[in-house]
Amino acid sequence: MVTGSLPRSTPAEQGVDATGIDAFIAALAPLPGVELHSLMVLRHGHVVAERWWRPYRPDSPRLLYSLTKSFVSTALGFAVAEGLADLDATVLSYFPEWDARVSDPRSRATLVRHVAAMAGGHAGEREEQAYRAGEGDMALGLLLVPPEYEPGTFFAYNQPCTSTLAAIVRKVSGGSLADFLGPRLFEPLGIGTHGWWRDPAGGESAHLGLHTTTEAIAKLGQLYLGNGVWQGERLLPAEWVAEATRAQVATSDPDPDWRQGYGFQFWVSRHGYRAAGAHGQFALVLPEADAVVAMTAQSPNMQQVLDQVWAHLLPALTAGKGPEGPWPALTPDLALPAGTAGAITRATYRPGPGNAAGRLRTIELSPGEITLIDDGPPVTAALGPAGRWTTTDVWATAHAWSGGELHVDVVFLDTPHRLRLTLDPAGGTFTAAWQSPPLTRRPLAHLRMPR
Image (cartoon, rainbow, N blue to C red; front, side, top):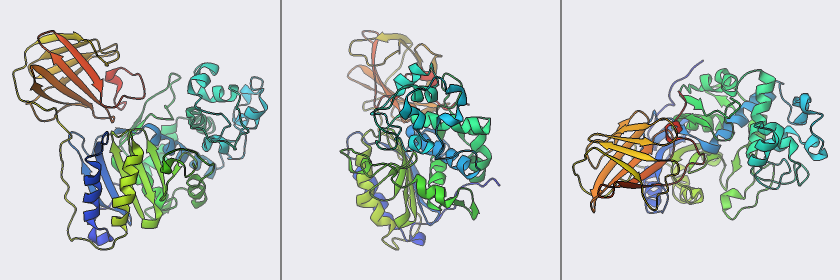
């Protein structure tokens, strides 16, 4: 049965002090490199607070980066529940066609539960080595790159582990991850907006490529908070939820919320556990408060965000009744380029000194429009009045003049990323820099959810 949106309530009706939500947002505002894009707070299964920062919208899909891994883990959970996969089987047992190629005894002994917990025995990230060894198949590559440690004894965040889980689910189901999750997760939870980047072999990019909405992130968190029960119907076994979200292996990290241990593609936190992706994509599951917090952001320092959750938001979730009425659903603007309005004329700009634009070669400017040209399809976006966001398809722009230069910010709405451009009409040159760089080297036109 397909369900719609999560039920809404006021903070006070669910025993939440809304002033603590305001304090959380206020505490993030002055932190360098922290830019919140969306926030949903759930208690007792109800959304009590939600906000999007313009130009982002509630229906905007978001590249989840490594939060994708928790959806892959969920697919594995369904496969285990249905008897299609076994945590205590070797990875190699699912790929007998590779038996003659895999000779390392540790690789041959690696279990499904080991790669689910990022404990395949490798001493660090092996994405490039696995890709080369497996000729594009990272699951094969994982088994061909000998581990330095006994599987199950050492944690190392390693993308081929997730790719291997996805390969197992595809092998036992005979289809794609999306096909497998459709009737089991996406349809029951009413997640209609989702899309995956693909790897060179055509499969879903399992370690970072899922795009979906903030509410879908919140729904995944609520499913796990409910121990696998969704609106009275059991979808996942409670035993899977318990195993996936407890520390399967110890972690070592300077940041306190990254040294609490790792489950099956979930991080254990100082409070509860989380699905997390680069730049601040979060589903925080807080059983002690019967709460879920879903966030999207452009915040490379994710520990700073969690520190403020524990300092301000968590106490508000357990404080009891706060002010009456709904939490204000404002739509504030993200930071806009500083400066004044001015005329824009038709011109072509080339890269100037100090340019950090990567493969961006040319910018074509005309009244009301900007076109970015790299080695992919051109990106053409509207330029509206100065000092406000203007949206074209999956891009948003804002601009202003300052010191004789035109400053244009281009937001790639399906991602956390913002490209900052400075155009010099006198020299016909531009400089460009990412506010926080993408983790993949895709053409600009591909920084979007596949439609």
